[in-house]
Length: 343
Image (tube, rainbow, N blue to C red; front, side):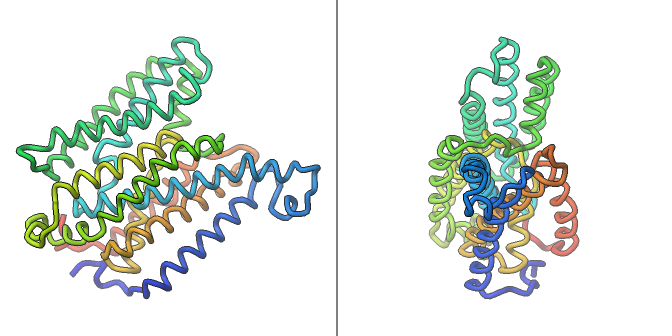
């Protein structure tokens, strides 16, 4: 019996409604909080000759929307990876999405800086490079781990760790070769930040997130079956190999799109599924939507905190999630550790 099984579980309708309410409140709070002091009340009253409405609609609202979408994507992607690997420590970086995106982004930023082009090679060069890098490395790991039509989860895990180290080394070489501006841009990107997010960024990632979230609808029952092991899932009639392909594609779409815009944000994809399972148990019919809601809420609140703790300066949200997530993750490990947990 695992730590999750021993946890006190809430009724699913109450739990999901509570998370939805928390997300709505966090969205309103994030819209209302900012270094400028402009809030929802000022916008509603129409003060400042429309300045308050401009700040909320063009600066703060797209940022809040991106925070919610990114948090939902990371929460769902972490749940899928942990269910696929049957490992509570799994996260999207294990299939190469995050390190691949980082390497491709570093290449574009450094190449653009070396060529003397402001802002890299173009407005959309960094997000498209990040998405392409994430998809390419995921596909490479999948091909490497597949033999005779069977994909080895263990091989993906080990190869993903190796590729993460290798891509980190290549990224380090690029950082060493970068000029001052490129180095600053790359450092800021690797910390994760939602600053400067526009509605165009939101529209760019939305189709990829929609595809990934829709793909998870076909993963719910197979992931539940995989909790028993691959062989048992096959005996129950589930297409295990197709489930692996769909899961990796969904994670690559969601994480690759968001990471390419906001950078690397850690701990959300690992901690959120743990918190959900403590309250609900391991059933993916509930864990997946709950992880989306909780991930969106936590990242929205983290970004609100990042905007005000050092105002008028701004702390990258990746730092906030690391500061909050690391101790929470250690606490979860001590609470849920069980030597009989499948891995």
